Image 1 (cartoon, rainbow, N blue to C red):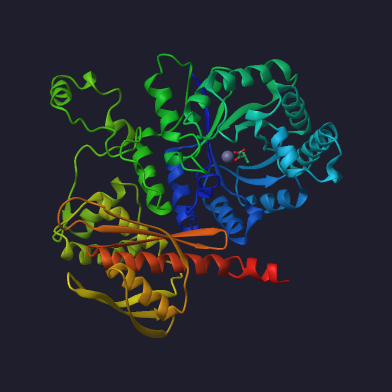
Image 2: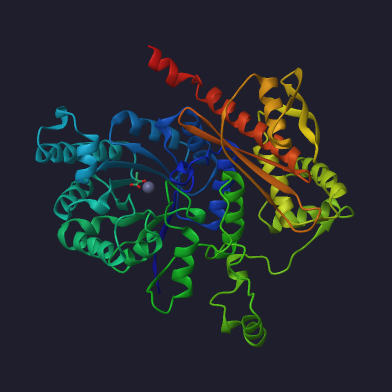
Length: 526
Ligand code: KIV
Ligand code: ZN
């Protein structure tokens, strides 16, 4: 019997902190349901105190998804209360609280002398804060996780002291994050081993690790920690997260499975759901998976050279250490088309992970037939896009009613747009450096706005001349970024749709959080 490694998924919390990855509540719920299908052990659903939108999303996931649901909180009663309230509907809930423990963080974040004059005094203050906050959280909830932020760069003696205090105060999971992705595998493994030796009550808690990927070592560090006593790994789908991201769930899970000959432990992940989960997360976050990404990249199971193809035909083991089927990678491409019926559509959607009520199916079937009229062949990725739009398209008060573009080698690119804003129709036109610039200018004129467009990406979703074009537009407002997605067989229309979708996401965010978009400027003015 192998020992179980708990998989703590933080795609919806740390993963969502990736620049531009903001997800709305419907998208988060859909991802959380898929994570449950993947059979992760814990879902970190957000940081409830940070905004009303975060609170509502954690609450909704706690109400609907039957897994251990957790929410992050800093070490104070206000944060912990918000997390507890948001998690309340969950049948299995965990409060996750953290303090900063490295000297870098203590000096950087606790510089004020109210926390102590010397480093020694500040460390004592943080030790007490840790004990008090964990004890307070424990008074509300049985399952408490404590994280020592920047543990990777924390002095081992102090780290041992603080972990011991957290366990004494009631933490049943103690997390050792390599917050800055600084450590190397042997060093990180040694840190876990030292904690096992130094912390007298360590056997009363599960050791967890949470590695960032700044040196590309997050997965290697996580695995090194298992060999030294860790039994929970925190990770994200596709490895998304702050900066270079977090340890990638699929790489850890498959490393343990494929090299099961070396490990006495395994996870309970349903590996056949890995590919669908990866697609769902990249679709909603707009963070594309690089083609050569291990396990889930488009090339992960492609064999290009003649020698490799020949070897594969004779025996798959020659160049394949795991089968694509094991991670749910489609072995054959099923194609639907204009003659496919509702039944066929439903069956295919179920196979790629969507279970629809009859009402929803009727709506999706309508969009499907429109698409099938434009495109002869409808692939799985087209269906994912249809489904994504179905889930995301909520409260969109700005929509594109009409777009007309004039462009050519000798003409000035010009766009005419008609935009619907709730019940009003606004028409405007503009020229630009190219047809897309002209369309964006016309939209900005119509709405009297001028946001900063941070990035623009276009790609074809499926192959062939009739491929759907997918455009991702990221705009910035104050310190937040919003990514909109547009899909069409016409990439200029897709661009306009993506821009409008980003604007809708931004507006929904400010509305939900009851914040003014000009908050920063207003604060400065006061
Ligand atoms: O990277 C980190 O330290 C974190 C903690 C809050 C767990 O995300
Ligand atoms: Zn993190």
